[in-house]
Amino acid sequence: MTNSPKILGFVHGAVRGAVVLAAVLLVTGCRGNLSRKPPVHVNPNMDRQERLDPQERFAFFADGRAMRPHVPGTVARGFLREDTRFYSGREADGSFVDRAPVPVTRDLLERGRDRFTIFCSMCHGDAGDGQGIIMTGGYGFVPAPTYHSETLRAQPDGYLFDVLSHGVRTMPGYAQQVPVADRWAIVAYVRALQRSQWAAEGDVPPGVLSTMQTTGGPTP
Image 1 (tube, one colour):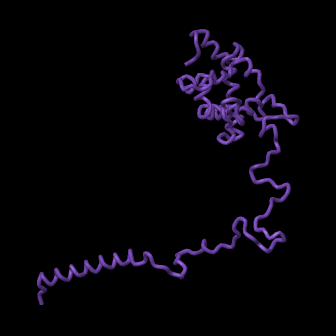
Image 2: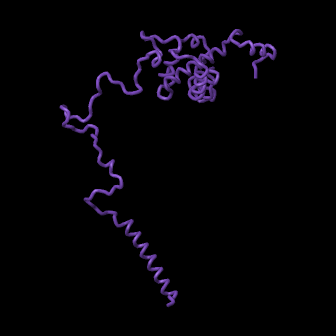
Image 3: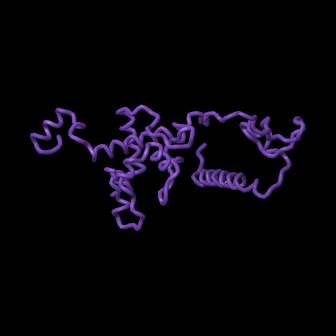
């Protein structure tokens, strides 16, 4: 038997209408309704945890508190600061350490240069002369000192570490941004910058010195 186009069109329209109506009812049917039944969760593991909330009462302990005080003498992992020279840059008597308490290697200097470029050069300049873009851009900041002054060249390494950690005058501290080891790397690189500006002829490797004497300038 052949179905007429009119009947087929009616059936198709009725089906589409039923689908649209079902979708509308599905979306809006649950809105505004109250239910005392718990919500359905595919994975309810996190809904019922064997734990205690902050400030909650807990009869298991004599003081009735769920939160427990720290055990005396304990230190959180990663927060032990026994090496005061490394972590504070100071001796036991509180004075600044004269030299950085880490081996000064090529890798340390490269790390120091990388961190110095990121955190210091915008004020102190790539050469440590206080001519960074923040100082020369006319932004109205208090001028940063040059590292090549007699005063800063005479300061112990611990002083530079302390300033980098806690700041001085208008300079903020960078203890939150720069880890301790990286601060010592920056100190070592600052010393390298200072030496580069005050180098004597004996500090230049013989091969480089001969090239400089021949060409009248540094090697390319």
